[in-house]
Amino acid sequence: MIEPLNETERADALDGLPEWDFNDARDAITRQLVFADFVEAFGFMTQVALIAERMNHHPEWSNVYNRVDMTLTTHDAGGLSSRDIELAEAIDAIVGD
Ligand SMILES: C[C@H](O)[C@H](O)[C@H]1CNC2=NC(N)=NC(=O)C2=N1
Image (cartoon, rainbow, N blue to C red; front, side):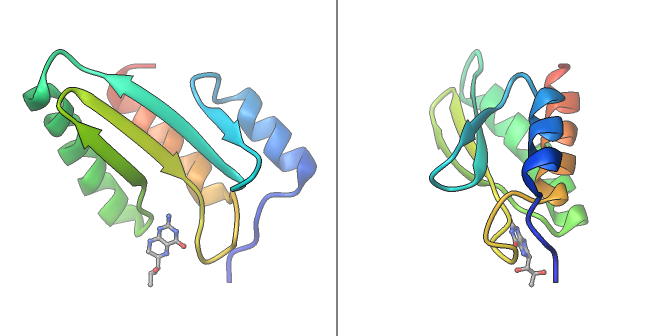
């Protein structure tokens, strides 16, 4: 059973993820991306999907044309865990941040 991050761990993790916002109500992190068009957005989502499946950790997300909205939290932990931080870092690497 994975545990949610404690206060110190959460603060440290958020420091390392400046492109992500913290959603206190959900104990989740969110990021919105805008691409040139749908093909670029869906190509990004395809790359994330493959990594998420490999990690067995999956984003909550939505896509409208060139926009992708992502929320990361760990359902099994009831909040933000180290798995979300690892997935966020992998997503940032795809984006080039
Ligand atoms: C059974 C399977 O391992 C779990 O349901 C995994 C799959 N992907 C997951 N993704 C996310 N974001 N949180 C989880 O708790 C989670 N659990």
